[in-house]
Amino acid sequence: MKTSLAIFVVLLAALARVPHARTQGGAGHFSKEGLAFDYPAGWALADTGDAQMQRLMLTRPGGSNVIIVFAQREPIKNARQLSESRRGVTMPYVANVAHKLGLDHPPPPNEAQCVPVGGRPALGFRLTGNYEGEPTTAEVYTVVLGQRLLHLVHLRAEKDEAAGAAAWKTLLDTLKVDAPAQPSPEADKIEDIVAGGVLNGRAVRKPQPGYPALAKSARAQGTVAIQIVIDEKGNVTSAVGISGHPLLQPAGVEAARRAKFEPTTMCGQPIKVTGVITYNFVLM
Image (cartoon, rainbow, N blue to C red):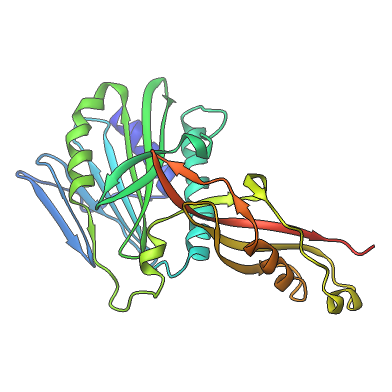
C-alpha cells in the first residue's frame, strides 16, 4: 500500500520523484525561506520545491501516511488574487483527489471543515473513498499565513489512521510563515477572507445597474463580472470590475456595492467572503 499511495501522491502533486528524503532519528524541525514546522521522529522529509512553490512531503517508512505542505511563493496581495488562486488551484486539486478516491463529485463548499493552523482556521475537506481497493482518507486544507497561500494535505489508508494523527497535529500546531518584508496594505484583511465563487444566487438584494448612455451609444453589451468582498454582516465592502466591456463595468460596480447578502458562517463563526457577482447588459 505504501508504494501505491506514493504513486497516488505523485499523480496528485505532480512530483516526478522524491529526492533526498531523510528520516529523523529524533524529532525533526524544518525551517527554510520563512516557512517552518516540526515533525515527529521516524518520519522522512523530502523538499521538492521549485521557483513557484515550496513543496515539503513527510512520509512514514513502512506506512501509507503522506503529509504535504504546498506553500505558494508569490505573496497574496488582494482579495481578487486570493479568489483566483483558490478557484484555479484549490478546487481543481480537491476535485482530482475526489476522482482518485472513486468519488463522483468533490464535496460542496457548504461541507467545508476547519482545523486551527497558526492561530487561524484553515478551511478544507475530508474525503473518504477507495484507492486500489484500500479504504483511503484524504484531507485538503488551505490557509493564508504571512500573505502566502498554503495547501496542507494528509493522505493515508484507513489502517494507518492512528499512526499519522500525531504527525498531522504536530505540523498544524507548529506551522509558521514569516510575513513578507513589505506587506500588502490589505494583508490583515486577506487572511480573514474565504473564497466563495459566483455569488449571484446568494444575494438577498441585487439592484440592477442602469445602462450607461455612453455604453448604449457605443453599442456595448455583454456580461460584466465584479469582484466583491462581503463582510460578516452580508454587506459589500469592496467591488472591482474584472471582466466585461470597460464602459459597462462602472455601472456594475455601483450596483454591486448596493447589493446585500445573507451573512456567511463557517465552522460556527461569521466570516468575510470574496467572490464574483455578474450582470448581463443587453441592448434592446
